[in-house]
Amino acid sequence: MTRRADGVLPVAVLVRVSAFGPATESTVPGIADIIFRTGGETDVDHVFVDFVHLADRGADQTLELLRQTM
Image (tube, rainbow, N blue to C red; front, side, top):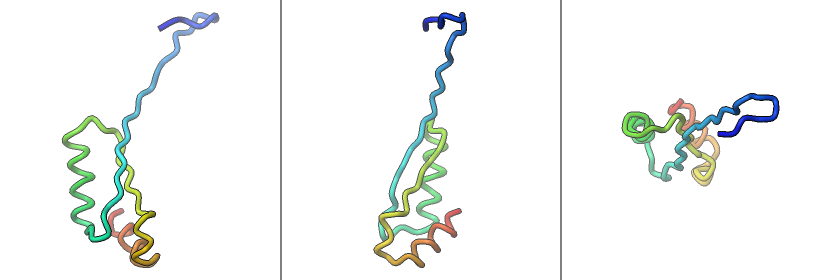
């Protein structure tokens, strides 16, 4: 790594994120299992669960699944 003109050595930050979208038939225990397994079996720092595509289940059901997962 090359020092800047002012002599400071820049620092690189690497954050690993895993993203997944649960299937329509997913359950809270199933989603939680994926989150915990990802944390335990990989070097991922954060897990992002994308609930947006589940809106076809209806907004209320999707939000309830999100609430229960949190």
